[in-house]
Length: 147
Image 1: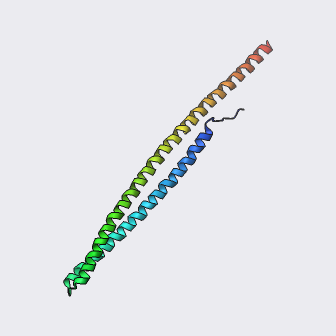
Image 2 (image 1 turned 60 degrees about the horizontal axis):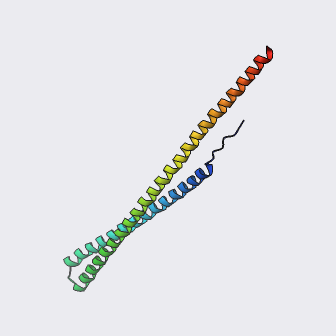
Image 3 (image 1 turned 45 degrees about the horizontal axis):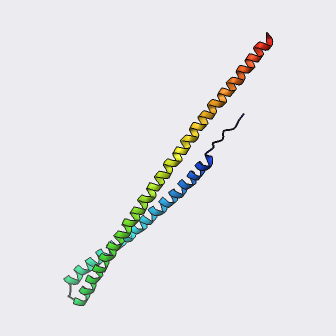
């Protein structure tokens, strides 16, 4: 019996490897986004602590130097938070780009898998036709050989 050989199997194998690489890249981009979001949350918590400290400084004995230092710390935290928000936004864009690339690669892989399935169905039909022809020839030979 003949063996099914998909002519585009090497391309399908490459598509599968590309898909695995894209999945890894997507996972890495997602992990980076989570790390950057955690850094942002940490900065927000630090700013909140400085703001709480500002309230304490104003309510107790007033020390202008301490209040100014705390105000400067709050301003620094605000600018760090803005910068980190930009980093998070960039990481979100990277995740989206990786997701789109993964999606495109998956579509390409599925296309080649469908081509493979169709080729296999055609192969099965050809084999069935050849077997049917062989049976017909055998029956015809047997019938004419007996007569």
